[in-house]
Amino acid sequence: MKRLVGIILIISISLSLLVLSIETSSYNKTYYINSYEKYNIVQRTGESLEHLSTITDDIILYLKGDGGDELLSPYFNEREVLHMRDVQNLFNLARVIKYSGLIIAMMILAYFLYKKEFLFIGKTLLYGPIMTYILLVVLGLLASTDFNKYFTYFHLIFFTNDLWLLNPKTDLMIQMLPEPFFMGMGIRIMLSFFIYLSILQVVGYLYKRKGKGYGKTNKET
Image 1 (cartoon, rainbow, N blue to C red):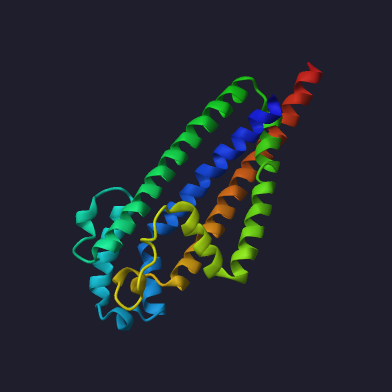
Image 2 (image 1 turned 30 degrees about the horizontal axis):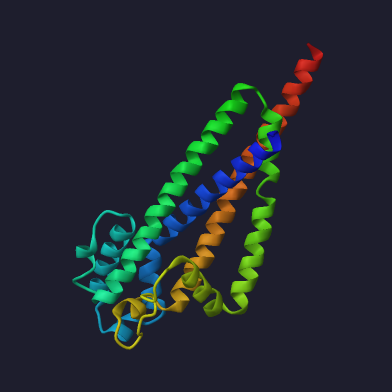
């Protein structure tokens, strides 16, 4: 039972940290602007960098759930807006997962801290993410072999329609956000996720040390 609770704890924290990694990367306007310059988006779209910057502000607000279709309709056609509505729904779901995971994790941690199960907490947080690392490395290696293939799989899994199939000759969204943009975004998400998990393991290591010290103190007394 204790092991099962530990697994639930790691899954809850990992999902929350993954969503956090996705959000921090997706809301990073600097990355968008750097990508526009790197991939010559001004020439590709015929839009000025200032206008692209304005569009980016509204895209980020939309992803945060701080507005509806009216934010995007001045820039994009109906198909693009409908696709972004699906994307916004995914981000809304991700936020629910993030906060639910945090609540579950906090409840579990609070219980074991109350029970002074420092060693259990430490070992769980220190060793629990190892499987996540392995899964991330495997996914990263697969994506590096054929990013387009696995990016397509992603859309087929998470979208129930074909609105994501945009025309790079006519649709501004795919012109602004070409495949290399998403490759870079994926790398940023993975790196930030690794960093968050590493911080989690440091916390685990400290609790493990605390638990061992606490156990020795109890034996002495």
